[in-house]
Length: 203
Image (cartoon, rainbow, N blue to C red):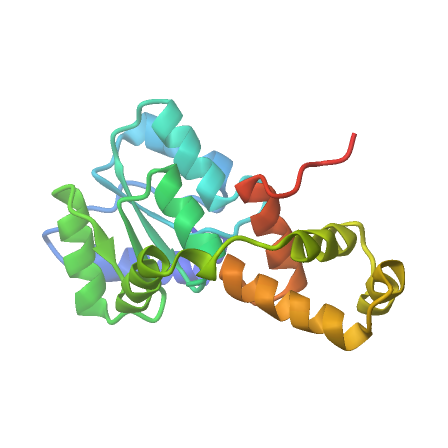
């Protein structure tokens, strides 16, 4: 399930050329993925995460809620905690990156069909680090305050003025926040904070 036709065609061709596999369907967004999975009940679903409309994580959670027993193998370009953890929490069997070699991808699908967990080495390393040093500790109260201002659309300069600190100090707080949340930019930090319940929607 991928919103890029070229990617879907490439994957379809790769699996169709191997007699061990049968491609039963393809979808361009999460809603279509859920609809086809309910109808076709495939052994394994390859799922991208960022798609128009319903995203991959939401689709994975919906499949689990509906009792679709297909094993979902995430195939994406994103390997940060803010993508990996929600996908696995939603019910993904495995998580691979799109630069995986053909043989690795075929092995992963076979393993997923057996119900085995499959993780790209980079993803496995991230999760291991997260377990051993979970987020380098919780966000401090000041970091939460900075994040709340960022979520409200404030620039670094505006946040600094509101807190009576320097802009450089705001940047330092943001870098610490990114590290603790396992993200790399402001938007991802805000999204991850909402996902973890650190921030709540106003009103």
